[in-house]
Length: 273
Length: 175
Image (cartoon, rainbow over all chains, first blue to last red; front, side, top):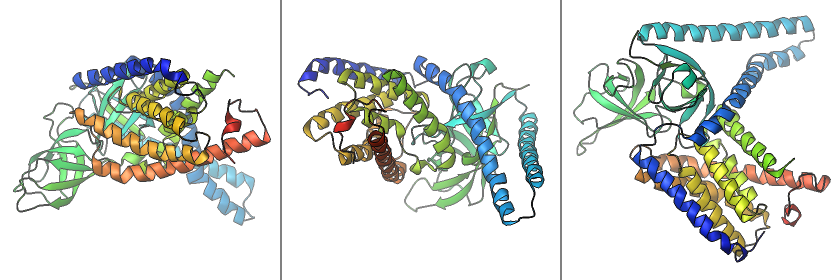
């Protein structure tokens, strides 16, 4: 390794690079960060197919581990099971997986018909690599007419919105990300509110202390901020904390969607049929 | 294989592991920061200019697969790279515990600096409570994994000397 004295000549370059990157960062603060940069397009263009491939392989492995491996383990304890039975069981597992996927897609299709908006189905192929932002990568992009800002949902409720698109992939900021804000309504009382992500859950912001909100209340999208249609479930109230001296109450929501099990999603592409 | 192709392959592998396998099977706090490990691993082995370029490559790759503000990961990694090079000059850079400590401190610093830089953003933020819950565990997991990687590298180098073609590896006190 060179000594620092030898590297003195590169200090100028370092400072210049730092300055340029800082300008780049502050430019994106001013432009509200919108859209995919050229570097994003290149990296996502390369990583999209790789992630899709890994996704397919991992799904196969997971299916085997979850449905087949344990069956084989049981079979080992039973000498009467023949190879033919194992083969049949494996086929059964494949059929069950197909049935399960079919059921999920059917739910998604039913939901797609019920939302009365043009929609594109997509598969989740990757997650945020940073560890402190919550986003996922889906296998559809500009080629399928997806754009930044479009709403992403599943039959259970709100997933998030698209923040970056390339030709073949898109990045979806999840509703539980701390920078995600969705306009909501408490279904029972029609109280308007804002739902902000907390990393793993959601909380209601600026909800007046006098508003009637109880644990178990369902919060749905209000449709006011434009991204999501009205009435899509966001989450259920899990905890309400009121203080006599606070103007707002603290409300924690459990998301309607299980974000750890996202596989297929719907991107709402149009304002209506 | 050309060194840069090898590094690129490592970056792609780290991104795939971090963006798919770790994300599917591990909860957020238990996901190690592989890209940071690569950055630290490059500190003693790459020349200053190559290291600078590699750092920008790592930061750009991370930003593309993250919902952060563009530029923030590159900026944080560059600050880490420059301070790492300065520290390596002052301390014994050929020490395994120092490299492992760097990975631990690196995760904490990365989270802290990113959080500070995001104070200037009105659209992105990382809540302090979230950071406090996630970072210490993530830093520990990353340090453990990094120690295991270094141990693995040492084994390979001991039984197949020269196989990894990493200049200066023999100087690192990996055993």
